[in-house]
Length: 139
Image (tube, rainbow, N blue to C red):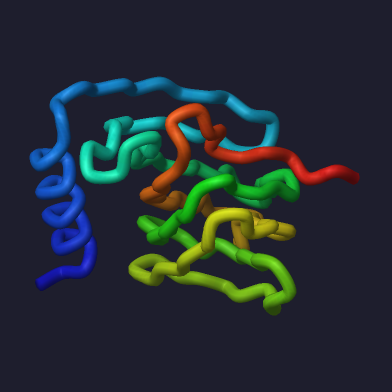
């Protein structure tokens, strides 16, 4: 099965197993566009919520260094994204590839690898009910 279709089917099953509430909002950041597709409380993990979002990078765009209070799995939908988490090396992920970020990770680098083509991520994140998607790291 096509990896994109498999991921979409898995996320659909997850969404169907959770209460049906749809919260779509777009955040126009200076460096990237984050769009929340779904947010649901985790009934089997009180105090936690699951979110599905997309991150759109224009050619050459860069995210600010940040951390996530929750655990995240990123899937590259299109283009190529360079990511460096904690003490790891910067890795270029291409469409169809994923990576995992444990809760509390420091995401020092996240950027579109191309200066001519856009890139897009699909992200699943599990965090505290009052947790923020990301927190900028001190400079």
